[in-house]
Amino acid sequence: MTMTMDVDKILAGKYPAKAHAARVAAYIRTKTDATGILYLEGAASGLLEDCDEPVPFRQRRAFMYLTGLDDVADSYLVYNMATKQSTLFIPPVDPEEVIWSGLPLSPDDARARYDVDEVLPSTELNATLARLGAAQKDTNKNTVFAIGGRVAPHVSFLEFDDKNFDLLGEAVDECRVVKDEYEVALIRMANMVSEAAHQKVMRAVRTAAKEYELEGLFLGECYKKGAKFQAYPSIVASGRSAATLHYVHNNKEMPGGKDLLLLDAGCEWKLYASDITRTFPVSGKFTKESRAIYDIVLKMQLHCIAMLKEGVAWDDVHLLAHKIAIDGLLSLGVLKGDKNEILKARTSAAFLPHGLGHYLGMDTHDTGGHPNYSDPDPLFRYLRVRRNLPAGSVITVEPGIYFCDFIIRPYLKDPKHAQYIDEKVLNKYWDVGGVRIEDNLLITKDGSENLTDCPKDPEELEKIITGA
Ligand code: GLY
Ligand code: MN
Ligand code: MN
Image (cartoon, rainbow, N blue to C red; front, side):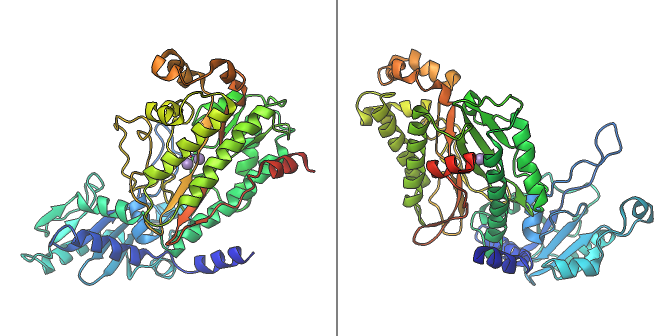
């Protein structure tokens, strides 16, 4: 309740667009002496190929970051680095368009709603750019910073001596890593909606006929709470489908019996994502095997979360997840041999082939993580964050253990790994499919704060599912 009130209070204010612009400008200044203006274009409106329906609108993230305009198309921003003045350009009234779509956002409404200094019709854009450029001609303040490939042909930078199309995109991507209070409130809000929707699915899982019935329930609950968009396509994977990491068909009949359901689903709130996974028994009762795997994954998650604080190397947290997975699979007899040798051989990647988590923000897999997808070390190849975590960053912690035939079979055929896997014991676990548990964590100076408050204790899950 208090949390909801705090979030409501923060979100009653404006999205801090000017603070973001100042931060981005400061980043650019650390890279070059030149200054001038930042120029950004929002996403354009358009029609689908071969028909007159609109393309679903998706705002450009960099534009949102410096304006707060999540749902207005065909807009532009100019930010003067010297005066710190921002000017937003929005579409003018087009009488033909008003017939179909109603009146567009007015400059007065835009000024009241968004954290910008001035709002002009977009018909004024080129004249404003020419004026700004001419005023600083032949000084070191005459650079226009824009994003390559994101400047419309009708836009002219003629009065600017220098154009830099590299730094602005990099600056926005890097600045987005550390979230401010407002952004954290948006992520929290998305989490609160998704948590309710996850619990709705838990309560219906025993009686659902198809996976997509549960997907519909999840989406409906998000919609009901005002979240019309999802951060990513929902993964509603029962039984062995859970071993496919991004299974999105969601069209199988619900098996009942002893299977698990892996639900990885999260809505957006004003473009900010939640990304939550829960895995639970369809029948309301874990089997011995599924519970054993669940307990290992939960231990991996809790220990990794306990390790979080400002400055921790994400590589190290990911490594801890593998060490606990190895210990757990050794105790079940799925793995055999010396745990240090197993780790050295990277055999655990057969069961945990993805990274422990990723930054979360306006994108589900948010910017600034600097992954190395060609890392020769298979343990780290798919780790989306390869940095020390700063306070204020938000990261997912999503360990999993999967029994994917396609991935594990080659390990069984390779003597380097086969020596550590007991195939007879492994055969008891194929039906577990996969277990993943995923929460969203805010990194703080001394630890972390879990922004996801959704049941994951196995006994509590059983109670929710059976209505006990
Ligand atoms: N839902 C996608 C992911 O967890 O990365
Ligand atoms: Mn994730
Ligand atoms: Mn996820």
